[in-house]
Length: 484
Image (cartoon, rainbow, N blue to C red; front, side):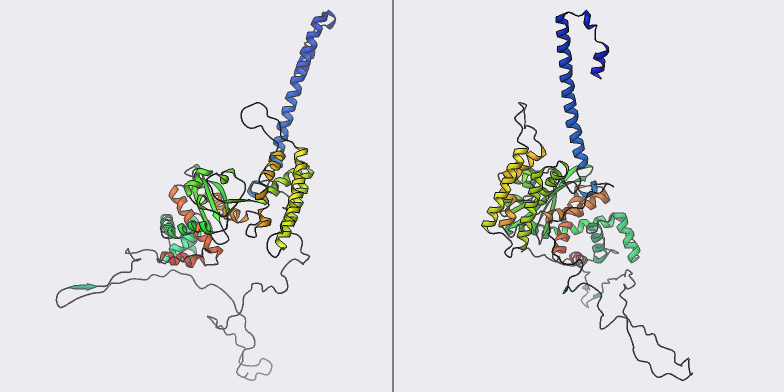
């Protein structure tokens, strides 16, 4: 646009003096430089926008829910092909219905008493074949009435029975109804209204949303000591996984923090995402084992005593983006190296590699990082305040080199996995809750959810029936999980 304006307003060159022509040439040259700078800036902006569009759940840390209708390629598995056919393998017991010896009901289907061919009477029939149908009984709530009796002694003193401690009102819901309400809302993330509808449809029992909220608050109170014990148990574990995700409370952004092991799950929330929240929640500051996480800088607070291990699934997604979208060969070689190491560790009987093999991998690792540095060197300081902006490739190879020991800890410590999947799995159900309900109205509701989910996720890992556990909790006897 600027060039066309200049062309239409150019004066008659023949009428210009030599100095005027030189000045015009300098002006045109300056305008061309400005246009080149504008074009370069626009090309950079276009490249950044195209990079954002190209990112999805398989080549970045974006969740699958953001992929929309344009589904990304299927993520490449870290597992190598075993050569076995797909499906159940020989010797696998499988899961299916098994006949029972004493069925609850027996329905007899007898033949006719007279032969339809010769009209003779048939002898007493015998059992020729049986088939069993597994079904639910008619589910209907039942009412138990508690009565206290009283009597008077000859001396005039009145004696009477005492109601059980958990029977405190003229009419009330029993522990199984309350357990069902808490189970549906906090394990399966069903909203309050649909929870009341489900209990009404399944059991024929009307229940209000306020009752469900009260049941969750009561469950939080009785489960809190157990969840506090879960939090304290992290002081003694060798490896823990951490993650965090945003949630809305009263329309404001809060952060839900997770700490998990193969046996237990703990979650809490705070207004902050970083070290301030971790210190306030007071679990990570007292943890002395290996903390597996995604590389969030706040986990490396100088006052924390833990060792670190990084999630290589995150690294692979970033490398896949560089390899597939930006055609960077070093990223493809790093993908192959990390996957090969993961497979070798999985096949190792000890669950870790020898120092010799680790040394070989680390040498190859550094060689690939040098390729990345050669192709994408650090940008020189611009002279402006703050950090100089670097490319994604530069930032990635820089992090991989700076924290190389944490990247490769899975190869030397059999307790440290290749990924942080345990923590990411704990995040999934609260995100489902957020999608269904949008968030929490109060901090008290969020706190109840965190306590109940911590307990339920822990008991699920340990194979405990959650409905039975909640029923026992409402009866005053909270089943305890194993901590080691």
